Image (tube, rainbow, N blue to C red; front, side, top):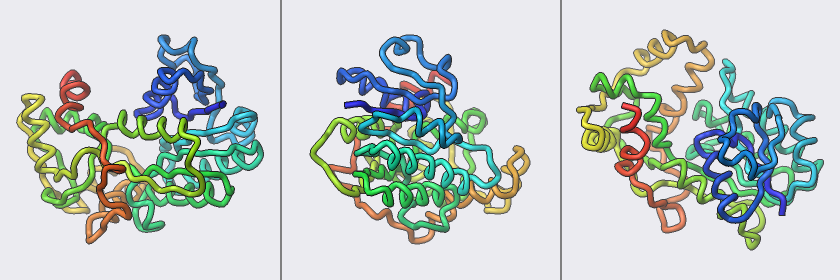
Length: 289
């Protein structure tokens, strides 16, 4: 079984690669710059230099592949929804051209809305493009990544993390490693077929108030969450250099999921994963502070 992995140096992809290696698989990794791979795994994978924005290159690199772990890579585009759809079209083309039987796609909670959720709308479009191939596809609808807190290091040091969600609004938070474990299980399991949606909700729904309390307790930095008006957040994003389209795409990931939104899949044993925010903060966040 030949398994290809995209974004193998990313928050989730790197754990997918090591999980497959531990399972005895030598994965094919599609990476923009092979020099960025961890030297410890370089001899345990087959690396191909590929820009996922190049459809011909993606098709060529995935020839002979049986299963594909696909992630729409981050993009600085002022229209990330269109860019994600373009990446998704390249994935779908490769699946069709090469007869790839199975795809595990890293999607997000909120993709079920199909529109009105900012950048997540691009993931929804990729879901649809992959569904149209007729391959067996799992869409991993993931919660809020713990690793997003790494982008808040300065805010944590200052003592205030500013958000546009109500600070008492619970939502699923999840460790990237747990998402990867779910993906690896699906890539190795040959018993499922058709279109599958599997949420990855982490161990518990948390509010920003609760998350800030965990961060405070583990890191020793006293942190609180503060809700700010949408326009203030827009101004802050624009001040950080984001274009108008990207500002709205980032904002939409929160504003589109805050007013009465409920994930399509509820929390069950299948959608709950084990790593707690406290454990992740101890291992990943505290050393950065």
